[in-house]
Image (cartoon, rainbow, N blue to C red):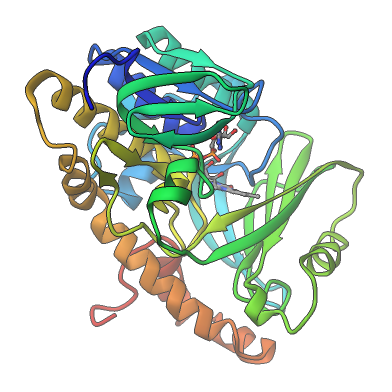
Length: 366
Ligand SMILES: Cc1cc2nc3c(=O)[nH]c(=O)nc-3n(C[C@H](O)[C@H](O)[C@H](O)COP(=O)(O)OP(=O)(O)OC[C@H]3O[C@@H](n4cnc5c(N)ncnc54)[C@H](O)[C@@H]3O)c2cc1C
C-alpha cells in the first residue's frame, strides 16, 4: 500500500482545511499534492465570511496552541473589522456584546492560504475533480490517476472519501445569502426566532456592504422554503444585491473517527463546524494543522495517524462538546413562539446566551 507512490500525501480539496494540511505537511518535509475541482479555489463564494480575531480565538478555544502561526490573515483579505456582536430576538431588540472579529474577503482569504501552502512546497492541481479513491490511488474525472501514501479528504461534507468510506450521516443546514451594497454599521448581527427556524440569520457588515443570509432546519420550517425565509429576512435591509450564493453546513459535530487506514478526513468532511455558531473556517484550519503535523511524524518516524484524533480531542474536544450541547438546547428553545423568545432574551439571561453561542457551558450543570 505504501510502495511506489507519486506523492507522500494527496489532499483532496484546497479550501481552508486542505490548504492548511498541505502547508504544515509540506513544511515538515512531505511531498504534497492538493487536487481541487475549482479554478480558482474559493470561487464562487459560499460563506458568511465572519471569523473571530486571533485574540477572540484564544478565548474561544483555549487549548489550541500558537494561534498566531496558524491564522495569519493578511490585511487584503479583511473587508472589515468588527468589535461588537448583537444577538437579536424576533422583537429586534438586541443583546449587545464585545466581539473582536473580521468579516473577510473570503475568496482572497482562501487564495492566501493556497499561497502559504505553495510557499511551504505543496503543489496544486486545480480544475480537476476527484471521482473516486481506491487503495492508494486517486482517480480523476478526466481519467488521470495519482497515488500517495496518505490521502486526505478535505473536500467538504460531500468529499469523495467521506461519501464512499464513512457510512455516517450528519444534519445539514441549508443556507442562502447575498452580498448587499450599502452602509450597515459596525456590529455583526445574529438573529434567532421564526425568521430562521432551527438555525439563525446573520448580517455581517463589510466595507461598503454586508453579507446577509440565513440557515434553517427543514424539519422546523412548516413547509416554507429556504428562499421564502431568505427573501423575508433580506427585505429588512435596503441596498443593491450584487451576489447571491447558497450552500449547506454540517451541524452534527465531528464524525466518530477521522482516520481509516491511510485515509483521513479534515474540515467539513470530518464535521469540524461549531454547531452553535456555524464557525467552520478557523475550526477547519485547527484540524488541518494537526493533520499536517501528524502526517509528517507518521512519514518520518511511524507515528500512528490516529494520533491526529487524540490531538484534536485534546485541543477541541471540550469546545465541540459544549457547542453541540448548545445547538441541541437551541433547537428546542428556538421552536418556542417568538413572544416567548423575546422574553427569554433579557439582561438576566444575557450571559447564559452568550456562553452558549461561544461554546462554553451555559451553567455549571449543563
Ligand atoms: C453559506 C455558508 C456560510 C458560511 N459562513 C461561515 C462564516 O461566516 N464563518 C465561518 O467560519 N464558516 C462559515 N461557513 C462554513 C465554512 O465555509 C466551512 O466550514 C469551511 O469552508 C470548511 O472548509 P473546508 O476546507 O473543509 O471545505 P471547503 O471550504 O468547502 O473546501 C472544499 C474544497 O474541496 C473541493 N472539492 C470538493 N469535492 C472535490 C472533489 N471531488 N474533487 C476535487 N475537489 C473537490 C472544493 O472545490 C473546495 O475548494 C459557511 C458555510 C456556508 C455554506
